[in-house]
Image (cartoon, each protein chain N blue to C red):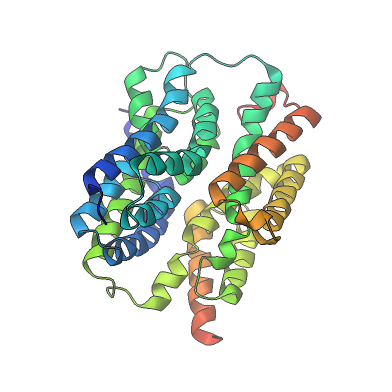
Length: 102
Length: 236
């Protein structure tokens, strides 16, 4: 390590903040274009789906416990349970499956 | 500040707190093992508030790469926030004071965005602050404890908490998919392509940040072309 850690931190914080801030600060009007509106409407679904899979398989110490947690989350999520509930049951199912099986 | 909306945000943000705590705990451990002080690890988490970018930064700092490479890496990994902010800005009232936009921008992480963007109405800043007030202490606190003591929690508990954020994402995207088959198909295709890019030779060299950007632009673009939303759907 030879660079100045604080300059590194400043650079990364600045870049990350600007990326987040500029669209929020600059785009204030409601977008009227139907195509762009539709695009932005679909963005979170695709982004979150891509972030979940396959990364979820490597989020715990075993791919099998992750698969069990994934399945439990899908079932609970499908029935429209709250965020905290779905999150909690997937954590518990991973913990128990690692305790019992692996 | 509307108290009830703030409290609702705080409540909805609680799974983020748990998930962040686990993820940033491991960040704290990695940061110290790559040569940073606990104070520096906490400073990174408190000023950046992002996961993938911070982990990537550790290897850049310990490898003494240039400041430019640091900026470029952060830009690529975090460019997805640009899409998220562009989407989120449409959820706010046009006349909302700009100071709220500056503050909320700092807290617009993947998870905060996920919770806020699917809020079934126009977004109030109070609600966003509630979600962020749950998320940020989890992120910073986990980093602090992880960097001070890597052996504070047993491995089995850390492993189980690793899935927390993903469980929450699933809980966010599935209920709308249940009502709207087009969204269900879109989610399924997103996951399949994401898996292909992650595992196929050559394609798997694409960083996770780029994978998210490429697939989001491509698939949300195609979806908008095939099935533009009707006016009534946008507030769902």
